[in-house]
Amino acid sequence: MSAPKIFPDGFLWGSATAAYQVEGAAWEDGRGACIWDTYARTPGRVHEGHNGDVACDHYHRYADDVALMQKLNLGAYRFSTSWARVMPDGRTVNQAGLDFYSRLTDELLSRDVVPWLTLYHWDLPQALEDAGGWPSRDTAYRFVDYAAAVHSALGDRINFWTTLNEPWCSAFLGYGSGRHAPGRTDGADALRAAHHLMLGHGLAVQDLRSRDSSLTLGLTLNFADVTPADPQDPGDLDAARRIDGLSNRYFAEPLFHGAYAPDILEDVRELWPADLVVDGDLATISTPTDVLGVNYYSGNTVSGVGPDEAHAAADQARADGPASDSVGSEHVEFLALDVERTGMGWEVRPQGLTELLIRLDRDYTGPASTALYVTENGAAYDDVPDQDGFVQDDERLRYVREHLGAVHDAIEQGVEVKGYFLWSLLDNFEWAFGYDKRFGIVRVDYDTLQRIPKASARWYAEVAGSHQVE
Image (cartoon, rainbow, N blue to C red; front, side, top):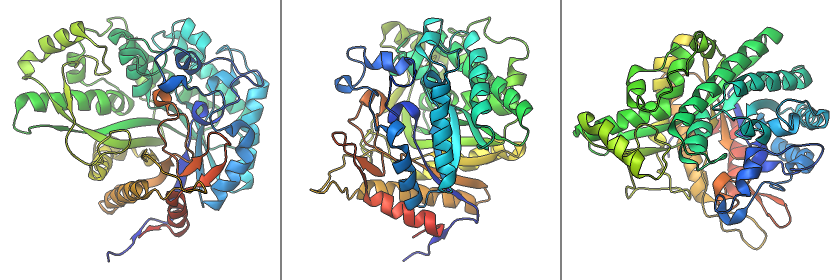
């Protein structure tokens, strides 16, 4: 039997959710419509027409949920505020919406659970989408106003602030492939959205820093482990470079180096808007932050054509459709290998997390003295509850154990990872998959809304309480 993996003193153990996925109370206390309300009501977009109107009813059950966090030994809770709840029209403050997050914050603090706030987890007010959405530069400035409003209400009690969660998803799934809200399919708009999301991040960091220099500020990016189908094939190697660029370097490079990588700009040259980057934008985007949040779930094996043929192949694939989130690299093929997969169909690649953390530390966060936290990691599986609703979710438990082992391996190799947030605390609305996919370590009975901790929750509570993985 191997020795337990002991994590450093002060390592932060947490779990995470997002507002639209858990809150419910969609039309209470002045909340306005967000793009996911609209998208979920568009036929064919979300599994069986599910929506977040009720979700887990966290809005009303937050006190019980926080008590459960304490029982599970969670040191922190990463949650997002709903822009549409705080500013129903995207511009005007709704005090009742802020009051909910104030109550939640107080409840967390009373239970010794650190509140970790994310300002944007994909729920843009529909009013701002109607005005152009993230492809409009003005949305970045509206985001700063929103951040300031939330800080005015909660800045006295919350130290950890994340601006955006996974801007890749917001931009490329939302405006490229249309697989997420708002469901638009325009590659150039996806590139505009990505830039304006990052501009909004930088402007918000500057504003929050001016308000309180003691805040711990950061951004959360989603990363994937990308490998070529044949490491000796030039086409596969180019495909891996392209998808790694779009998935991993597109946001990290301007954030830490103040520039978009030349090879990525070359890949998207047919779609890149000439007027997109204004003088000073990249300096704003690269405003120093304290934290890089790492969301990691899986990896991709890809194949493509030779570098000399890639532009023509991408142009042809784009013309033939369907719409793709691989903007500028629409020809790249994602291979479904016969390997272990989660209920989402995602490859299980714990070793990729070790390699990713080492790479981020070497290329980005180490030189910048930016702390690394794993802000999301977890898995959906086809849970089978017993007659009492309990789930013996051994596959999820094994997935989390292996990935925590991967984090520990990176720490042993000198990477300073300071915390881990398991996704997710609760089964919840899983975006376009509706309530069909369950990521939670706590089962939610969607008929009664009863919370039942799964085997993985009991195990994770022991890990969080002991700072070690057996």
